[in-house]
Length: 549
Image (tube, rainbow, N blue to C red):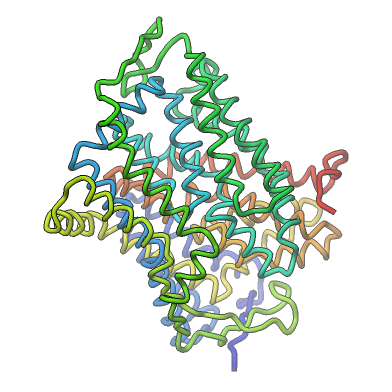
C-alpha cells in the first residue's frame, strides 16, 4: 500500500514550512557563509533532509534510503556522465594545444572581452543548452572563457548568468514536454506561453551579463553587440515556440544569434577595446587583430567542438534516441519506492497515480555517450594513442571525483525532498499568497530549480500544484504552468549542481561559495522580474491579451 504524503506534519503550516526549509538552509549556509567544501555541504544537507523526512514527515526508512540511492544514481548518470566526458574532451584539446588555437581564434573574431562574453556565454552556450542541457552549456562556455584569460570566478559566474533564458527549451524542449505530460496541458500552448515570456529576458540577458562583468559604462560601449545578440535570439525564440513547438527553439535561435553577432563584427567594433584579462586596460583605438595560426590549424582546433555539436545534436533527435533506447535501456524499478509514494491534494488531484521510481540506464542514448563518442573520435584525429587516451581519461576522472560526489549527494537531497513531500510544503507556502499568487507562483518555479538543478524536475515537482492553484484562483493554468518553467530558469544559476559544473570546468573546485555569492543577486533579481511580467500577464491589461487562450 502506498505511503501518503503529509504536507503539514506538525499541524502548523508555519512550523512545517520552517522545518521543510532546514535542508536548503544547511546546504546554502554551509556553502555561502561557513565556506565548507561543497561535497561536504551537500552530504550535510542530505543528512538533514533524511532526518526531516524520517523524523518529521514519517517517511518509511526503507523508502527514504531507496530515494537516496535513486537520486545519487541519477546524479551520476546521466548528469555526471556528461560532465566527465565533456571535461575529458576538453583535456584532450588542451594537451594537443588545440584549445590555445581556439582561444586565439575567438580572440581574433571578438577581441573585446565583453563581446566574448556575449558570443560565447550567451549565444554559443544556448546552442548546447538546446542540444543537450543538463550542465553541458556551462561546462563548455566556462572552459572556453577560462582559456581566454577570464578569472575563474568570472568564467563561472558569467556562464551561469548567461545560461538562463534558453533553459526552458533545453535538451530539445524536454522541460516543456515534461510539464505537458505531468499536468495534462497542451504542449503547444505551453510552448507558446513560455515563448511570450522568455523572449523579453533573451533581450535583457546579453546586457545583464556584460553589466555583471563590466559595469554600466562598459555595457553601454558594446550595446550594439548586446542588442544584436538579444534580438537575434528573442525573435526566433518567439516565432519557433509559437508556430512550431518547443523542440528546436534554442537550436535555431542560438545559430541566428551567433551569425548576427559575427556579421555585426565585420562592420562594427567598439571604440575602446577591452583586451586585457583584468578588463581594466582599454585601447583608445581599435587594433587590427590577425590570427597567429593558419586556416588548417584553426580548422583542427575547431574540429573537436564541431564533432561535439554534431554528435550531441544527432543524439538528441527523438528518432535516434528512440532507436538507441531500444538497444540499451533497461528499466530498473527502484525497490521500496516505485509506486509506493502517494502525493495528495492539493499538490496532486484526488486519486492520482502513485509516484513512479524507475531508473532508466539508457547508456547508449545518453547525451554523455554522444560526448564520449566525439571525444574518442577527436582523440583519434588528434593522434592520441590508446594508452594516452586512457591515461587522459583516468586523469579526468580523478579531477572530477569530488564533483561527481557532490552531484550525487545533491540529486539525492533533491529526490528526498520530492518523495518525502517537503518540497510540496514549501510550494504550498508560496501558493497561499492570494492576489499576488502569479508573482510568487513564478518564484515557486525558481525554488524548484534551485532545489533540484533542473527545470524539468521543477516542472515535475510543481506543475500539478501550479495548475490546481491557478484554477482555484481563477487564473489561466497555461499561464502558471509556463511561469513555473520561465521562473525556474533563473534558479539555474544558483543550484549546487550547476555551480559544481562551473567550478569543475574552471578547475576552481572548493570555491563554490564564492560563485554562489557572485550569482545570487542576479538570480533573485531576474526571477523577480519574471514574476512581475507574469503578474502583469495575469492581472493587468493589455498584458492579459498575451495569455494563450
